[in-house]
Length: 272
Image (cartoon, rainbow, N blue to C red; front, side, top):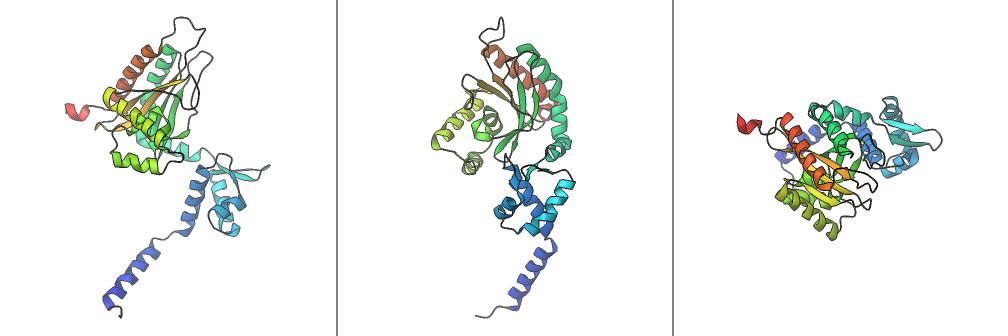
């Protein structure tokens, strides 16, 4: 069966559009950045080429440009390339994130000092949480999460807050894309999501450090959407005197979350 002139014309137009908007060099650069973002110890040039199914000559110049623009760093001793904090810094220039961290800063500092507990704020980033603000208390013996850390959403109390208004099928997609997402892990996370839906707060034992309880509350934006999550990795210091207990910390965290939400406009659309 011969192809009609109309079909041939359509295929030619589609090919022309594909060629018009094709940017092979940009694609290579983005592939490298996305690959390195998933590596904690960096990769050698040959390892990058192998992972991307490219020749070393194809990625050599791209790595040189990314290094020159401070997106990647080459360790001279190990010959491994790794990401710098450049993309994280750029994300903080994005107006919504910049406003969120600016508004939350003083409230987080005051809460950390009052409770003698660390606090961090995280946003949804693909299937992970991304920590965009972090504050430590003045005391010793603290447990905190590194600024800029990315952690799989479903292994955190922050993630339960960020996901509690997502549609079930959207959460299912996140589970499908998350490594080590066992049925038991999914059920445990869904219970945390339900806890936030019912009570407005998530309190759950840390899956990483025994004895630490993560307390998290959602931060809401102007239209009622979940903009971020505010979390305390609560530690009970055995020799501390008159420190707030976990229930007092939870109450203070809820109030801090409400103040931040109000400052970024939560409820404004309902009032107007």
